[in-house]
Each structure stands twice: as C-alpha cells, then as structure tokens.
Image (cartoon, rainbow, N blue to C red; front, top):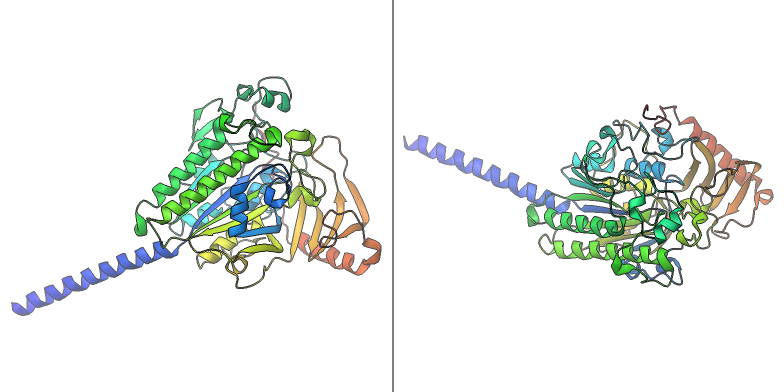
Length: 479
C-alpha cells in the first residue's frame, strides 16, 4: 500500500513538473516572440517629412523614430498605386503573381467584385499560425466584400475604411474644394468594425485620431497580461494624406505647409502616440520586443498641387515608375532593445516585411509559392548587409523598369497618374545611375551597353517566372 502511495505521489509530482515546464516554455515563447507594428501612410511623398528634407513640414516624432532607429533612403513599394502596393506588402509577393494589378483598372472600386485571393498568405495569416494576435486598423483596399476583408485574411479584428477616402462621392465638386469646405459628408464612406458598417458617412475629420486611439488601446490590451501576453501584429494603414485632406480641429492651421502640412502633422502625432504606448506597455512586459516600421504605399499625387505631397529630389510621383512613384520615406524602430541605428542606404522593400518578420521569429516563409521579398533582419540587427540587390518596377501588369545595384533601366515610361498620358517604349532602354543621379536626369545608356544587356537578361529571367492568374481588379459587381 505504501508503495502504491509512493508511486501515485511520484506520478503527481511528474505531472506537476511537466505542467510547470510547459507553462515556463509558453511564458518564454511569449517573451521571445517580438511584436510588429506597420504604420502605412497613403500617397506620402519621399520629401514630405522633415527628416527627409521638407523645409516647412515638421515631423518631430518621425524624426525621433528615424534618429533612434534606422532611416532607409532606398526603400521601395511593390507598385506605384494603392491596391497592388498593399497586396505586395501583406503577401511578400509582387501583385502580378496574384492578380492584384491591372492595366485597365489600376485599383479596386466600390463596384469591384474581386479582392486578395483567399489562397494568399498574408503577414497576419502567417503570424496568427505562430500564436500571434492580429489587428488591421485603417484603409484596406484589398476587397470590400466579406471574402476579402481583413477578418478573412488572418486578422482577428478590423476597424477602418475598406477603400480610398475619395470614393463613394455623392456631391459634385473637386476634392480640393470639398476638403477646404470640410465637407466630409460629400463622401458616403463606410467605417467598418470587423464585417459590419458602424458609421456612414464616416467623419474623416476625426479618422486619424480614432485610428490612433484604436491602435493604442490594442497595444495596452495585448500587453495587459505581462509576460503571459501573446505577441501581436498591428497593421495601421492611414487613409491620408490621400485626397481629400481632412484633419481634426487640434491640427487645423498648425503647419506652415497649409492643409497638407496639417495632415502630416497629425499623422506624425499618431506615430508619437504609438511609440509612447509601446514604451508604456513594455513596463508590464519588459521582455517583449516591439518593432515599428513606418512607410507609405506610393509617391505623392502631384496633380493635386498643394493638396498633394512632394517627392523631394526624386522624379515624378504616384502612378509612375520613376523613383518618385515607388521610393518611399521609411523609418524602422524597436523597443526596448534598439536597432543598429543610422542611415541605411542599402535597398529594401515592403515586399521584404513578411520574410523579415519570419526571420525575426526564427521561422521561414512557406515553400509552396514564390516570394519576391528578402529577410532584412541582418540589417535591422546590425549583423549583415541587405540581401536585396534588385527591384522590379511594375505599372499595372507590365514591367516598366528594373534596378540592379545602382543602375536602373527604363524599358517603358508613363508620367504621373493622369488620364490620357501615353506609355512610351524605349529602345535602347533609358539608363540611370541612382547613386550619382537619384533624380534620373542624365541618361547614360550610350556609355554602358553592357549594363543594359545585363539588366535585360535579369528582366527576361524574371518574366519567365511569372505565371498567368485570374485578374482580380477587372471583376465588377453585376448591376
């Protein structure tokens, strides 16, 4: 009998020890898995931040973020307009691979029937499988029907507008005039909570503040359990500074740069609130590392004059494959352990975020599909160079340009996001050295035929890896 009691006691101790070990391992896993926050502006130009050279727009929080972390000066998006750019960020794949780009309809509209295919693996879906809690806040623009909303793509929750803030317009007039009149009711835009409309029309004057409050609330709730908290991923995608421009009363006439500067100032304030929340939440969970990335979906909408932004010294803007259309002001920051701080002049892209997050949690991207991104974690941690050596510039479904090292060849060009502009083919291609000539002013094609030939071969090799897929942007809802 004593022997039986002894065995039962030993069994109970063994079970208790195993449970304790499992609990300890879970706690350690929670501590070692970092949090990720991506803050994505809309139509922000390369020259629109004070840390990237704007003389009258003040962005102290983004300046601090860049100074404490990393300022990336050669960081690219996947496309020169909204929908395909966002698809590239979330999937790590060029939008030509999943039908999220089109020569006929550049982006999705309220009457679009398509969206990001369910077969795609987003950052949220990938991280959720690794035990993360996920939230999408802000502009989505990857399909407004239920099958394509964030909650169908790995996000636990969604709070935002399903497409661009200039859509669903019900009042005649220009976007500039309506913004100057603060007529937000001219746009019958839905604000959604998960899959339901919670407000229509949304008051765009308060939307940046409300997105920010939602993100800050999520950060604090996610870390409320301290070391037992699950890691999280937040995708905070502002609707602005896409036209029409709206800002809250606190920021009205706050900037020397007018209404556009006011909007950027409020986005900068938002970044400061997120950074402060991360620092405050880390006191409850001191082992939790958080990475924050700020960038934009494409270049400035130059045709809107002072209601559009500036690409700085870069050429052209939104809708073009010149540098001003696809190279974005980017800052990366981490807390409490800081990044290897400084200015990063190596190449990176929003396509690289999924592989980078995978690398930072010790995982690999799925092997069942082609990825166009690279793991940038060696640059963030200061252990090695960027593996990205090339960039492919798509305009709709067509490959317009390729960058290899410091050289960029344009096979086709089309200036700005303006109706009626014609595409121009170049034979031989235009060639620029982006180190010597980031403004793409001096064509050096005749001096370097060997470089052009190398880039042609790179482009041809890339094209061979592209397989036809169903186009999602051309599908319309039947009337």
